[in-house]
Length: 377
Image (cartoon, rainbow, N blue to C red; front, side, top):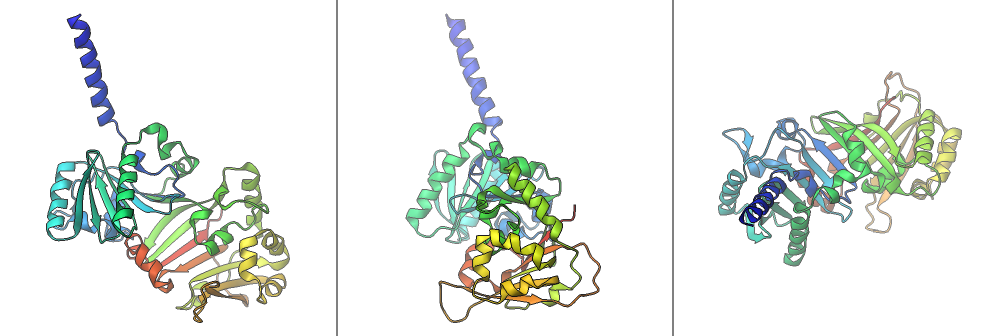
């Protein structure tokens, strides 16, 4: 009988050790995430990384490395279905990270230390909740107020306790992300994108298609303030996927230098080279884009178009909140540019409304422009 109890004790101990050591940090990513970016650690913290500012509080400037962070594995940025932004990173030495965060607490960078379910939590910059255990560093927000911070902390603790069966790894979003091979890659549901961008990337989807059913898959590069997304649209639904693929055939190589057309106050610019007669049926199926263009001369300009065209959104200055943008459609004369760009959506981050910029600034870092370029297959 003593041997029986000893065997049970050994099995229980072994299972306990196994469950701790095999806990995958990616299990903490919310399974309902609508957008997911995977970044190699070296690309994340390098001088040319757009995301470097996210980890500035954790960087040892002398050693040029992240305190306690495992740089041999990838780092993830996500948008959850609840509207939170977040970052998930693996730890190589939780004690080293803890010591460093205590130093940051003494400097006033980290505040409101709380221990909950064996994890440590802090607030950073009064908007972000930072949590960590032996395996994982998780940052989520933005939130305002002690009650909201406490609720988010409890949710983060639950996420960090998740097993494989509840994790993001069982989602189609994760499967599509893992199929990409670039150092910085992204998969996002169209519903996670700004409405105007979502409407554009959904051109060609069947009428009534839900934005959750369309994916934007892209490889990402960064240079001198510009984050470029090169990819295309896809779907879990075979019918939607086929419609999206067929619609891409209407786009011809853009012949103009579209960057000269983007003004400083332009928030979003959409550029393409199309026949209006071919584009109109897709516009008529796209309720969001049709609503955006309604009340302007846009439809006539698009219908008569046969070449390069630009759709420009600038902020309204009259204070009306129900309609935030002015929309202009420009029929452009043929240019001499010989490139492969066929559909470009450019977002001017610096022209974004201040509240939005302030809330997302930690995740935007040094990014001044975001450009989606439909990749030629």
